Length: 160
Image (cartoon, rainbow, N blue to C red; front, top):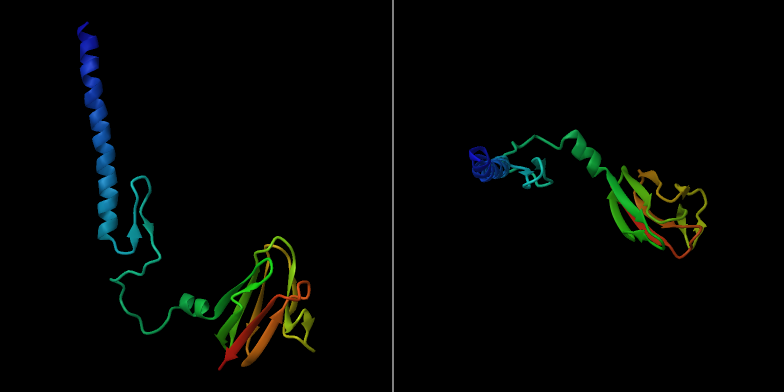
């Protein structure tokens, strides 16, 4: 009988200690995330880095290699019946990645109304879920169309 009473008294105590331990872990995670710039944490997750740049980062002389790669690449989504964005202005030398988000094939073709220009810089069929990368090195204006869906149009302006 004494043993049963002891067990009944100990159960709430053990439960409260376990609960306090979880709360301490959560508070510790949240506190450490608050002290570390550029991280966030939730009660059940490990701290994760965020996309927000850290204010404590030291300035650098110029862009890092990864920033240069990002600056030299633009993305165009190929939708069911359009290119997004419909107009794009880029610097010469920029690579444009055309991603086919539609559930069927499209083409990325220099031209208009579904017709390619003579000697196009791009005329590629892009399967659903696939992509094609095109570097635009020469300044100028390039009309892009889909030969399968002639109403799909976009314009890329390449500047020096």
